[in-house]
Image (cartoon, rainbow, N blue to C red; front, side, top):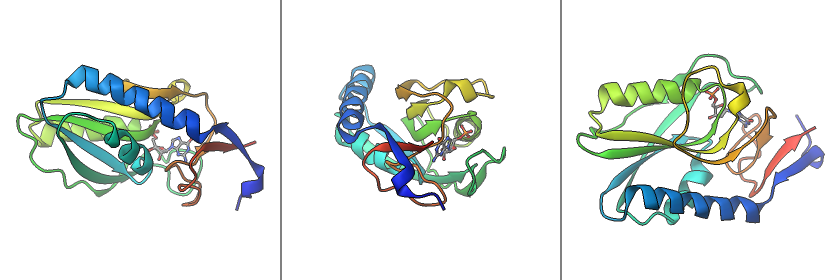
Length: 176
Ligand code: 5GP
């Protein structure tokens, strides 16, 4: 078990929240205020980003939740997506925005995007991420909205865990 005393701050709470408000503005400008948008939260990592972002969106919003996992209890992707709950309703003629904590290899989002396009009759689906680890990408997929680009370090906090812990931190940290 890593010790929280060894955790270094990468992004503090103020900077995180300011950037999320700015990203919400970008999303508001893109979609406008009139047409409804279904937000799809990938549990559990995106939970903090999802709630914070949604507070600043101006269009009518619905919330859906899926549970996916590709990391298990390690700091590296297992290379396989485990779909624990994929119960997304019919999104016929609707616009959807997938909200994810971090895109790393791109495996998880590639999987979910294909699943939604194939099964949910969606009119339009886009991706919003809090972090983009571009340098680790293995799948041909790019987020439409991204708050921060980071290099290849393992981060925790604000929904992101190590072994199930640290999700509750209001800042982003990393272990050296
Ligand atoms: P991908 O499928 O793009 O390789 O990985 C996405 C998932 O891996 C994220 O939803 C997240 O759960 C996990 N992940 C990737 N990088 C990190 C990281 O730096 N820290 C933590 N805590 N999880 C990560």
